[in-house]
Length: 493
Image (cartoon, rainbow, N blue to C red):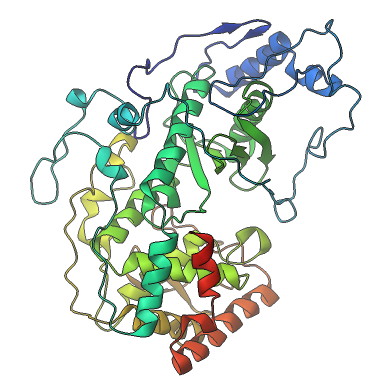
């Protein structure tokens, strides 16, 4: 029924499982009071919170990790474990989390070990359709053709051809892109963990679906990219401050006490709350949200932009690498999120005198209808044709132009970036835009994706970095002047 659904050979609606000392029961999905009841039942029967506080938990399973590793629970009468009388962890018993201060630091990643009970081919077969392929809906493309069945195309390269580089700077951008772009094997590892977690979560919320979203799937991921997950429990909007936080607190406790392959799950109480954790099997760090469905829609919008023009992905990757190296790509520290940077690149390419990109939402509104059912979102834009731009600028010229545009040309004070409209728009007086330093419109819910930039010194720093990079590349046309190119490429080998 949904993208990223259970693997073949597994029931799409797992039966309720009973474990020693633990009862995971079906929860009615749409009624918040019953979610509260599920929470109380979970705590009463499993006694997980008291066991955590008292230290009555067995030693975590030894390496190597696999998705079969569950942490056994010890009855209160058993012998003390090595965790008894230990000092309380910094994240236990704390009700408030400061997103700006809390940074998730990962230990060195162990070698990736795959659980052989989750075969790749079967997982790909069912991964995104949510039903056997013979039942999958057949959505005509923009030319009226019906695409072939199957969703394994999502694991193919977004764009197989690369632009030609006829100058040094363009070749450097291509070299960086080829060294750092996410590989299919990286995506498969992330999706295997997603499928395992979905089966686990469906024991608590049987009708839920877990989506892989963001850079992992939109075509702009790198080998070191984290993975974003969206858990969809119901069709209706969900209060993120109350209901979503409550559900995530349930999952955090369950991950901590039952799943040995999940390391240090942390509940982050942001505007869109998440559980942050690391998968020990794949070595990937994940952010899990609940019912933030706009992330599913914009994943496939960005994936379409990545596919229709082969200069987009290399340009986005070098911009993200440059911004990260110079400390302006971290929303938790008051600078630009990766999502905002991608939208800024797309906006620049749309607004050139001879555009490199169109507005896909304007040209193909039926493919990006914000009211479209979620199980169709990944299919509708699949066969949008490539864009035949008359702009033949090189990657190097586009990068220099992008930096110049936001260094000296864009009217930050009065304009907002709109990829949806394909142009810079005058700011309205709405709360999302009033007194904001940078305004980047989210293409579906029309919020400000750059709202994290709320301090003048951070905005000034962002402007300064654009200016310095533009001047350097304009003068020497050498990517090494703004990035340690060889060091970055060497780390990927």
